[in-house]
Image 1 (cartoon, rainbow, N blue to C red):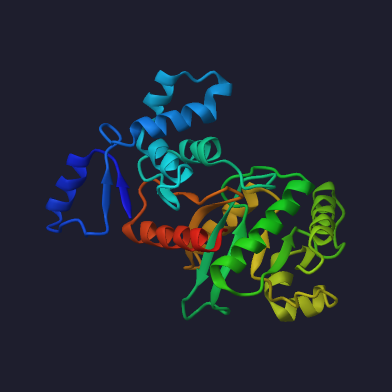
Image 2 (cartoon, rainbow, N blue to C red):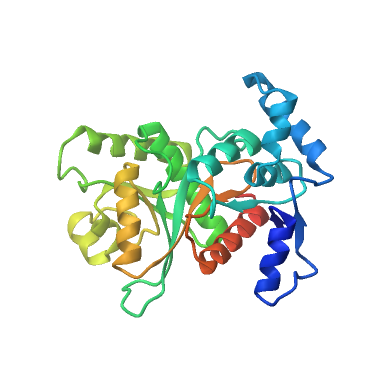
Length: 292
């Protein structure tokens, strides 16, 4: 593990906590790191087409979150976690600019890994909510891409078979609207791209999550009310849903986890807890191991 930032401040924090850095913990201070020249050159090569000069590249590389992303890009680290003291915009922009999209990926999106572990949860285990943190209003093609990538992320992180529900306020034609048509089209695109994927839509959440409701509203659905990957039609609905599940329902929400990048880079909420950081490190490590 590597910690990026002012070395004296990091060591002082360790001392204040009464612990010493573990032998496996590296501290990289961008202000005087022996890697700064290599990483600044890497940033310059990545961004010179946008008019970035060598001096600007050096200044950028000295920012801890940029330095961390450059470590990943250059192969000195497997993934990066940041955002406790930086905005989501900074973390995501840096990840896209420095690490870049995965080969063949047309979209960088995000998901929340939702863990239902409380006694009152009618279903236990991990579920994916996407996109609940990044893509504001995906079109049908983008929604399909989010579904395909989220299914891959779910399989990589859990080892279970993804069962993907394309969510709407309508179930199987119960309402007619352009936003419903978008979900239907996105489902068709995703199914055509991966015929083996277990996916269905358009579905209301209850028809995707509760077998008894599915039997009533969507009796022909292959999901049978047992979806574990939920694709929302826009960021507004996805963000509201995960927060309700977390704050009212008591689910553990890990994210937003970025997907579609060449290597893992994930964002934390400012004001995050130590448990939030630990969860995100674990997810990032799993992504690196499985190439997700």
